[in-house]
Every structure is written in C-alpha cells, then in structure tokens.
Image (cartoon, rainbow, N blue to C red; front, side):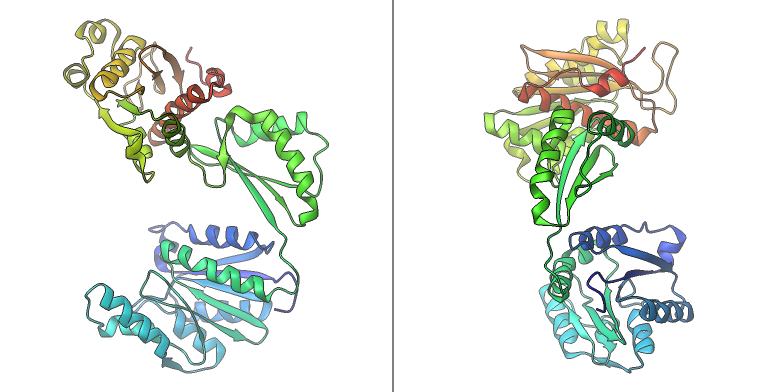
Length: 428
C-alpha cells in the first residue's frame, strides 16, 4: 500500500444485488471491520454479471486505489466471473490452484459429496494468486497485487465473508506502517431514537471532546451509540464521555458490543435462578423467538404461549369469557389474565403478556391500529400499561416484543418502570 491510510474501494458483483433479490449487507460488514483499523471505505460500486463492465470497473479501481475488496462471483456457476475478470485485469492466465483443489476435496469429503466439475471451477484462479482461507464454504478467497493495488476477492455468502474477515483484517493490520490504536466502544440501547439521543447529548454535553468520535447506528429494536478513539492516549477522555452518556441514558443502556435485550434478560434470570414465560397475541411468538435464539435459553425459559384467537386465550390460558366479552382482547383485564394463566401453567417466576392491534386493519376510534396492552411481572407484582405504536405491522411486532423484554429487564434491575418511550407512546 502506498499510504499509511490506504485508499479503499469495494466492488460488489451480482445480478441478484442489482435486481433487489439480495440485499447487500456485505459492504456494511466489510466497512465495519475496516473501521477497526481506522481505514475508511471511500467508494463502493455494485455491478451486475457483465464481464466487460466488471473488467473496466476493476481496472479503474486498481489504478486509483491502494486496496480493492471484491465481493461475490466466486461460486461454481457460469455467472460467477470474479476469477476470470481479475486474471484479465492482472494480465495473467487462469490455472487450477492446488491449494484451492485441496480445500474443495476436504470440503466435499466432510459432507460426503463428490467433487464434480462445477465445484472444481472454484479452483480455477488467476495464476500466481494467493489463497485466502474460507473456513466454512467451498469457494476459497484469493488475492493479487496489480501494480500498486492489492485486490482481495471474497465470497458473496454473508456467513462465509464474516468467517474470513478476521484473516483479512489481521493481514491488513500487519501491512500498515503505523501501530493500530483504533478502539471502538459500542453501547446498545433500547427506547432511544437517533435524533432524541443526539439532541440530549447536544443539550447536556456541549463540550464533547474532538478526540472522541461519536456515532449512532439506528436499528430495530435497538440503537447503537459508538464512541471511537484513534489513539490509546485518548482512552481516558472516552471513559469520561462514557460515564456522562451513562448518566444521561443509563436506564436505556442494555450493554456493550453486540448485547441483545433477550440475552440481557436471560442473564439476569440465570443469576437469580428464576424463569420467564410469555403469553403472546399480536406478536405471534416473537418474544419467545427472541429468547430462544440465544444459546442456553432453556436455563431460564421453559414455555411460551401464542394465543391469537379469543377461544384459545380462554381454553389454553384460562382467560375468562367475561373479560373477553366485556373488555375485548386488547384490554388490561385480558393481558393480566393471560399473564397469570401463563405463570400458573408454566410455573415460571415472571411473565410477559401482550395483546394489541398490529394492523393494518382492525382499529377503532377507541382502539386505533398500534394500540397494545402489556403486562409484565410475577404473581405478586404484575404491572400493566397501554401504549400506541402506530407503525408498519412487522416493526410494531418487533418493538412491542422488545418493550416487553425491556420491562422485565427493568424490573429485575430495579429501574424506572416508566421509561421515556412509555411517555412518548402513551395511548390517548
């Protein structure tokens, strides 16, 4: 690389990305991992499976960048063109690479598959290229130097790219002519929006130090606050910023790194040797799904109930026909009985119950689309709240499921049971 901070471009390939059949998440992953080295991506281009266009774009990138990462086009089919294009740009022949063949033979043997001609295509690579190990997929990555530009080719399968990025990042770190001091602290939050968080920081922390880079990544259901420094000498300044952020948003902060609400709730329950159950209507089992996606969740989650229809609420959870008839399924009385029924049938210590109107239809003047009743707690302390979250159906389900988990988290930690988003989403 010519510069201490290399100029990086990304080339994404594939008709499926251009058509929208596949959503590009890989460039975000690559950029995120390069950010650990304080290496920004300054340009990215997506090109379909057009050999001429791919060749022109890669040649242009090689002439104007220090590092190009190509993503996609390494597979066994006729439209996988990356090896052919790189060979043409580098001015070399294609040849079968012994290391790639050995990788394919091992990969096929582990799956009791025969190495056929289509798969063997993945070992026909630009002559003289170096192999980048793919620990889980059949297609190895590979790289070459073209003039002053290092070109690294990676598979388009997200899980395979993720598995290879450690090797690539370590290789780039070794190549840099300066020590890598970039340090990134990521705080996961729930119940905060980007604009609200930024406004609160601007209002309450106007003297934010220039050496601590502040960033946000909005998502559903969580939002990430990122505090980054480029020198280890600035870590004390970041720690002071963290303490001030925690003072400002403390009860909204779930944890560091990739912490998830469900993971935090399960950890808190395990510490107490207690269990949680769920009784869901409008979320359709999403709360249970969030919990069971965490390895080891069976320690603290034994049963969940999806009771969508009223007669199932009655027959499975024991919700009274009187409550359903007088107040309707979306009511405080019904979610209380759902929670108590789930507690009785599961033997759990805590329950989350939800019943609402996810839309787009089904709302009334009294209960518009987005209305939901939540109940959470145990037999002795069962709290309820009515919210209105009038958003698209799947987002409604995601945010309500997360809100239920957050209220159990708050109860277990002894935090405020009236968070900011309750005030914002209070039903009329």
